[in-house]
Length: 199
Image 1: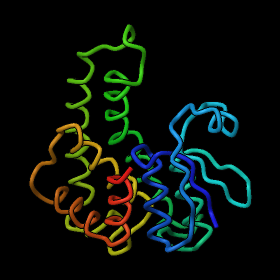
Image 2: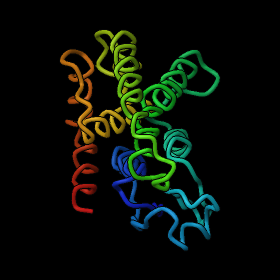
Image 3: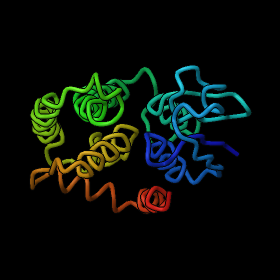
Image 4: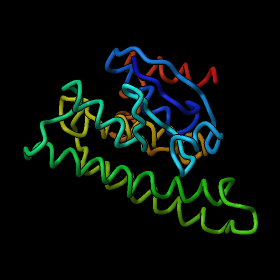
């Protein structure tokens, strides 16, 4: 039994979604970032934290890839060309898609008010739009980024595209919007979305 620490309205959602995809049992402890119990495990105070056998693992991307590797699904084998291509999509999702979202969030509510620069959010929206155009080209007509197989970067991208919608950064009509809808239609994703909505 895994323990997931973190509110599902944060990047913890990704870990919940991965465990739902895997069908693995877990308990959810919905602590907020910087809660004393979180800081006791992760000095940065960030969530999510996965406890596996009592050992804490930090960072949502690392956790999701660990779970995929451990259970031998939603990933290609390390050391293969396919895994290199998959990892490229993972890096793209973090740098190009999530990056503008996170910077916009920091300048909306994360940073102390005196350090927020309102104008940055306009540049972030522009960057995000450019990244989505790149995703559209890389995705082409494939159902998922690696083709027929749903993999870790699909889970990450699904979360980021939903995050964008939640702050009114609309997705253009076409293959990216269809891709997002396809991810959201997966039974495990529907359950994770319901868990987040109830939080």
